[in-house]
Amino acid sequence: MTKEIVDEQPVQTQSVQTVVQKKEKNHAIEFWRFFFAIAIVGYHIGTILAPRAMAGIIEAADWMAGAGEILFVFTLTAGYFLVKHFKRLQANPEYAARSASSRSWEYLWGRIKALLPVLALGILLGVISVAIFQGSSFAYAINSVFNGLWEFLGLYSAGYPAAYSQANGAMWFISGLLICSYLIYFFMCKNEDVFVGFIAPSIFVFLGGWWAWNGTRASQAAFSTFGEQYSTNPAVTGSAVSTGVIGFNNGLLFVLLGMCGGVILYYAVEKLKKLNYGVTAKVFLTILYLVVAVLVVMFTINPNWLAGEYIINNASTVTSNNWTYRTTIHLLCILLVGLTLLNKDYITGLLNNKYTAKVLDYLGGSALYIYMLHMPFIYFYVEIRGTSPATPYSWAEVFWVVTAISIVLGCIVKFLMDKFVIRKNNTIRTEKVAMATTNGESVPATVVDEATTSAPVKTEEKPEEIEEKEVAPKKKSTAKSTTSKSTSTKKTTKAASTKVAPKTTASTSTKTKVPATKKAATATKSTSVKKTTTKKTK
Image 1 (cartoon, rainbow, N blue to C red):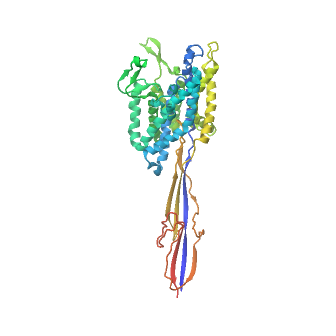
Image 2: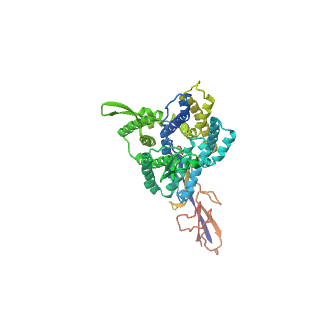
Image 3: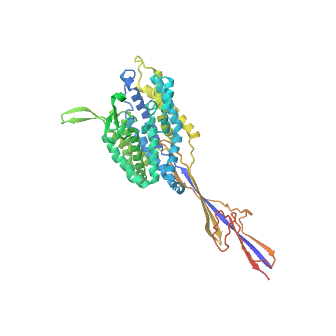
């Protein structure tokens, strides 16, 4: 007589989840993004209304005249958050194994998807407002949109033709962001070390120095050329225009320089974050932050406040146009952004409070939309207000009205974009480790690594800050069998014929045979192990 003892030993499955959670935003940087976006609104009011100020229709003012250089802040933050996005996804081996081109095009598409609806709205509003402002016909406005189709591909800053030479002048910056973001992201994917260690510093130092030495400004209507120049024949073109043999749009260079600076700034800030900061160090950083912030704000509101005087031969004081260098302001912008993102001083800590967090986050998130949509409303308001010198109006009147409209519209657009266009799918990495318990010992049986990565892309200046945080492991009893859900050891005695040969069987949910002598279950999705032994009885 033969006794067949079936010894079923359970497999305990432990599920460890590593969830990539959304990190608390830096509310201080959101404050600055919103403030500078509003300052740029004032800057464009001054440039658009300058001819009317000269005609006495509007009171002349230099308010927000320095905001044209403060745009450098947005290029820095764009480069910084590009690297942050890159490093987050690069941590996923499956993503890192993909080609540089596929990752770069995916990143670019994410940015385009987040900007294209607002880009289209801004261009259409710009064409209509400029047509009304200049007294053009509706047919001419429609044809201008048709001629400016390159704008919808974000290639305006590369020199491609645009309607009215860009109906919404602020859009050149968006074009520069799209072009430079793709190029930088591609080289980062191709070789991060070469780009960060050589290419980005070379562009920032040598090209930036050449750009500054020649007094070049960020302008969508000007090109920096490499090579000899010649003047076109006035008899053919109707004007003698200096044309470069080869060159790049100054606005594009401005964005490229700033984003390379933001890339370098990311690694510097991450390095500095690892240091220990005592009270003395924090007080020093607070004083430095306060000085830098005051200087930048003063220059933004009115550059004349920083214009100085100098003494000749110690005899007489001569008033001069001793403007603060743009490169000096750019350096202050780097310090301001770097200290804000470092978040080790007391002022930044004060801005990063829980009471105003949601307000600052929302306003900072709408800053790019405010930038993209404000210019058409300057034209609309001025046209409604009138052009008669008999009823002059002030810069402040236009500023407050247009700013209010831009903020409300920007917040509405942000809500709609977040709800219907931009999908905020946080990255989740789940690791499931099946632990097979045999003779009191636990050994890993299978490892399933499921990683779903998304590339949520915000705007210039506001990608999601997401970092990995490990949560406490959750132990779950997930052992299941296709024939039994029991987790207890079962022993079954069966009577069989003495002529039955001894058998050893292993049954798993995946039908994978497992030797009875091994302690570790090797099947990928095994949840139970059955051992059958045979004993003879007399």
